[in-house]
Length: 346
Image 1: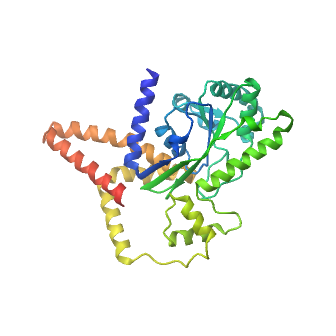
Image 2: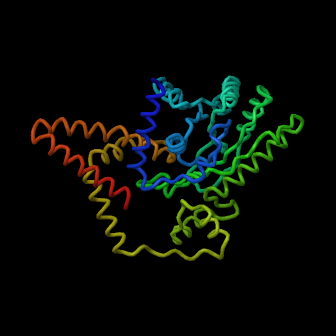
């Protein structure tokens, strides 16, 4: 039963992403050895959208190491556990909570021994900036602990580059690049684990910097992003963006044509009017209560995933009793088509 419910939820999230994203691409996913023990290591920009995108399309249901503070709410805790999320405790959660990580590390070891896939964000935090941040040692600690439990274990690390056109905006597009698997066994030297852990971290970071847009620390971030926007680069193609960064000096900014800006403004207004109750709920009540900008897309997506099916059912029930079911279905179908056209072509 649990497997069926998970599959239904996975299908629902895929459908939600179809209506939320203009396009969503996955590269290299078929080259991942999904039948082997894996640590998936993505960069982290977009709160729960990042793991949900991977879980929705991965051939194997991954487990997720998630910061422990999201498990405080009992209802959320049950839901997150159903999604295979495991709490990881950090020093900011209180030094006394760190001992609980031992049980989590033990479970990760058992999961890897069972050839499962575990997703952990090696940056240990999220940020909307297009920059790969320094990696924590957490994933190597899990690896060494798992190898202590099972000396025959042969896990692999898979860096995953997560890319968005506008991670906090809507409509958005996304692309996920699965990197070259890194076998861990050649680095398993108990006497040199600090050094070999650093080597693994450097290899993962190097891949992540190629699999997603990475603005080097030496470059002024805001000015560089503005120039990339002026070039109209496709942020879903990090290799092209990298070529722009490594090429000649970026050009000066150019203004968007007036007619184009006017046409989009009219289209946006019509979309808002067609979705006024949802937009009012989002802008007036939910968005002001989102404390971190990285969670904007998560809240917006979940709102749409829950609100629109309920609203369409209510409209169907109300209009079916009056004008008739075919009128209701036609109205709902027209509204769905209008929203879909906006998402796909805006």
